[in-house]
View 1 (tube, one colour):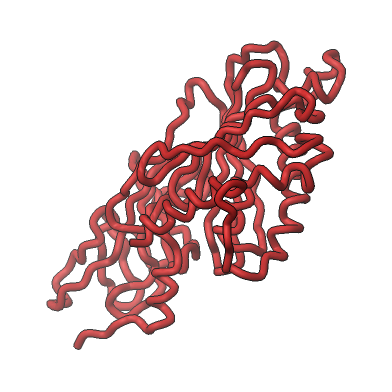
View 2 (spheres, one colour):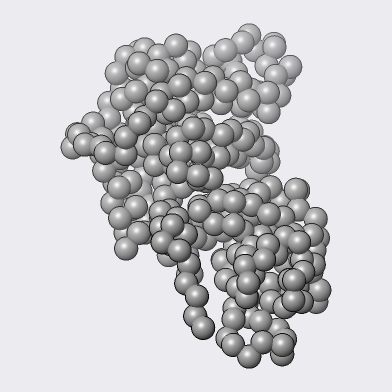
Length: 328
């Protein structure tokens, strides 16, 4: 007898575009101890195995739907606590003889990047995540939750026109030019904003260069003083239709061009105070300030119906094209 998922379950699984999504920090995982998460409309299990990238699998046993978080890990397999059915963490195949019907546990592609585990919401990745060499960069992060959809948060991150109204006390003092937007692949595109000297605000940001990958992440490079030393990875992962996790991963160059804790600090504090302000505290402050302003707007977006302007919203239009490809 073949049982199928309900219409509600099916719609939840199809709601989120195919792509890479950030899941859990590596340092939260313990070897052979299942870690349960609920993201992208899916109940998932993350399992760290010795010497391997953590496996990401469905948490419901395909036999009778029991939560596999109550099971145990044995010889590279998750063993269900109800009937003892064992499924390979690598392939999802059933490893036993009790059941003759073909059953299989769904597993997902996973990678480790920037100290986090990511999973691909699909079968075969259509694009790869960018890499930063841990020999050259240190990684730190801040994590937020927002009462907004994944798409709303990504569109906000891509929008340049709101700087004048929302961030005029921090980033710029007048309307900047719109992003120059260009595709870098079928599933990624680049936005570059050059800010005129009189419009650079307190941080003296010269260039904001953002490359977007798939539906849920972008890499933001900020140029100050002619140098791009640090990158901020903006990653979003939907928990529910209007509840989303935001992770900001700061990639900080270990050997800096300027002899300061941050290229931005000379614009904010006297040089003799720069050594007192660690990068982690600076990033915490700048990210908190930006998000406190943005989240007030994001949580008040009440409709997914949008009419992007062909000139002002070039980045948004490109994002919708990527979403369409990844939903096809």
